[in-house]
Length: 134
Image (tube, rainbow, N blue to C red; front, side, top):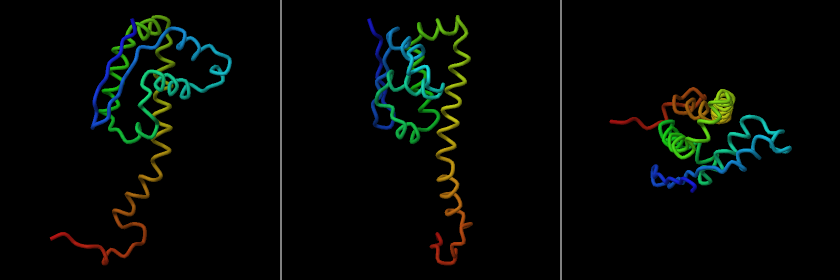
């Protein structure tokens, strides 16, 4: 029987599912999937396990919230993760997850830097026109 667990984070419901062997096998051994980068494979894995977790929503979550989802993923897919650890594939998967997170952060970083610069007044904005708090 498939394990399923639903959690609530900031009003969003995330249903994390145990993945069947065929899905995992196809993800890592299918001809078209074999052409995917490690990042794309992990993203595909997470989309299959938790369809509500879109890339856009992921970027709006706090790291502690992502950890909650990952903890549930580990819980419902414990048997699968145990097998990949035994055969040494966990190191490759962890590397792919780190690469995915880094890529997402790097895509987000320019807009964050721009917003930070505007907030600190380093963009050439005349700070004398900004309201002062009393």
